[in-house]
Image (cartoon, rainbow, N blue to C red; front, side, top):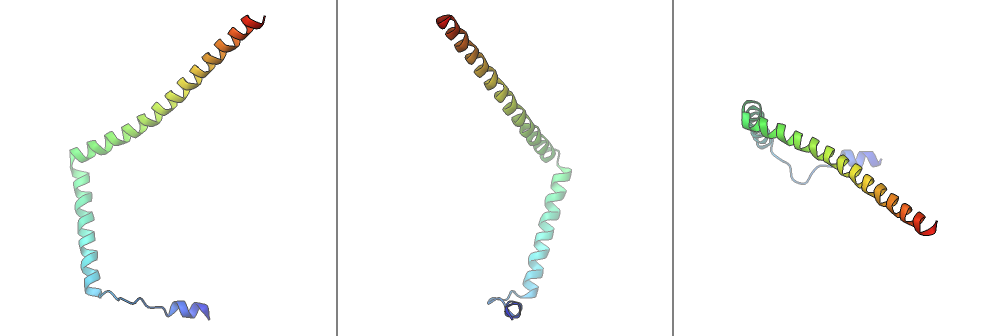
Length: 89
């Protein structure tokens, strides 16, 4: 009974079919143009390629910084433990 109620639901504002056809044609033409530009333009290709390289280097740089932070922490802990050993022993 509940399903029938939802199946009968109609939107308040109906879009006319010719208007929707125009919107679909404009959307398809826009995407066709964008894909054509992206595949033929050397500038767009180089920008996309450089953005991938930048993202890849960011990830690599993050790993390098994490390793450096761990190394600094290990060095600091080593100095502190060595200093405490000299003071205590």
